[in-house]
Amino acid sequence: MLMVHEIAPLREQLQHWRQAGERIAFVPTMGNLHAGHLRLVAEARGRAERVVVSIFVNPLQFGPTEDLAAYPRTPAEDAAALEQAGADLLFLPEEQTIYPHGREAVSQVVVPQLGEMLCGASRPGHFVGVSTVVCKLFNMVQPDLACFGQKDYQQLTILRRMVRDLDLPVEMVGVETVREADGLAMSSRNGYLSCEDRQRAPALYQSLQRVAQALQDGRRDFAALEAQGSELLSAAGLNPDYFSIRAADDLRPAEAGMAQLVILAAAQLGRARLIDNLTVSLSPTT
Image (cartoon, rainbow, N blue to C red; front, side):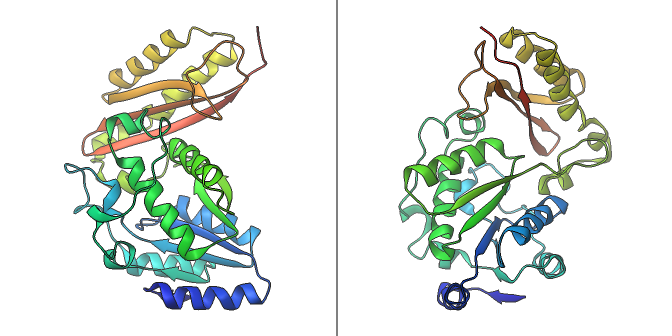
């Protein structure tokens, strides 16, 4: 596996692969890799001849009170895991490479409305940071396809909209969430959980399952179901941020007759902010 830190050698290697007619898949990450990230690499490996992974802890998507300095960084372990997983190139840029004129002066990519709801309402500017850095990385790598985990469902929806609106020639591939045995979605921030909080954490996924089953059973009182989901989180010792039922394609509030829904939830548990979601397919009703 090749490791590069600058854009010029990255593009030089990518050009060789393109001239050989090889498809390039891209997996952007912030490192501290777990089995969920490696599932993305495996998906990319099955869809392209070459797999590029980036590790960059993007300061633009952290708020002033968030965990940028404390965010776990494990580059040596990450590189070893990626090599074993079959990645061809690891791009490890410094902040100066991504934001050569400073993060405050960089042109920004804004996806309105989608980026302002749910997690965007709780974390102002977060998704501007995400869409800006992913757009820059797409321009640096120019992949044929990119793989993202569905755990960050709102993020994936925003990036799909960005690609569509900016006519970027990148196929967006959503990959199913990888979970622990008790259902907790894998996340780098799970390492913040104390032993006691780790025992409580599966309640997030369990609450999604309870509400999904109610929808499957025919309930359509969405506001009451959302309130029920939040109450389940509180009862388990989590501090809910939101619990929301939305249209799966564009995150509009759910309405009767919609066939494809997604239930999204976020909650604080100790030092960790947990997010998760569950898609639900229903028979269309009037």
